[in-house]
Amino acid sequence: MLRILQQVVLFFLLVSPASCKKSEKGVFNVENYPVTKEIAVDSSAYVPKMIAEYKKGLHKTMSKKVGYSAMYMPIDKPQSLLSNMVADFTYELGKSYCKKHKLPYTVDGAIINIRGLRKGLPKGDVTLGDIYEISPFENTLLIVGMYGKDLLRLFDHITRNDGEGVGNIQLIANKQTKKLQKAYINGKAIEPNKLYHIISIDYLINGGDGMVAFSKRTESVNMNLKSRDALLQYVQREYKAQRPLHSKLDKRISYE
Image: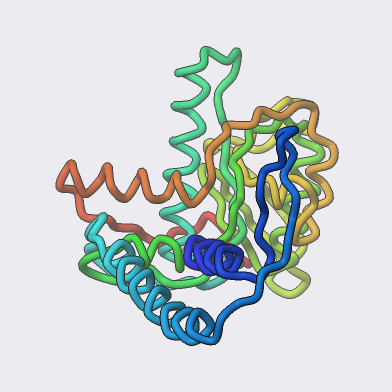
């Protein structure tokens, strides 16, 4: 749609009464010329036709099959099939990034906001349009360092707000108060003074959805990769490898 609007604006600039000509000194001077009735009529007829053509092309692009899912993955809290899948592959992506770029650490866990997923993943064919509907925001992936004591504050916020998408992280909260009781990374209890590395999106790391504990980060690495592009790449890679997308519910976030 952005390209459509750009083309529409360009068209009106071309047919607008303001025109320009180059002077002898190489400077462009603006002069006004009258627009004839014929041009006005033709332009009004052309614009809807042009938009229709671009919409047709856009629909063709968005209808392109990019993957296949073995199941319908809805969105829900404290966890869901879709948020679990996204958090898990994001965690693996972070580990691969650290290894590829020879960073002196690896990613310990992933955090994504369930509200950032705007549509469930359909069962069967997955189109490019589905990916854009699921992940419509221009969020960028980052890896940040955080001490365990600050992560515990962050995880308490997550459980008190009914959960988020987490990968390689297990949270147990009180059923009545929703207060965090226990937290594990890679199956081990979090150590308050230990430095961990988390992959997440810039929106959350900058305090979005009340995750102000991210402000205690010790460092950050911008992966220069949009979360939507990462999702698309994952779906396409699995499709190429003939592995249908799947997910499962577990006890990564529970209230007891």
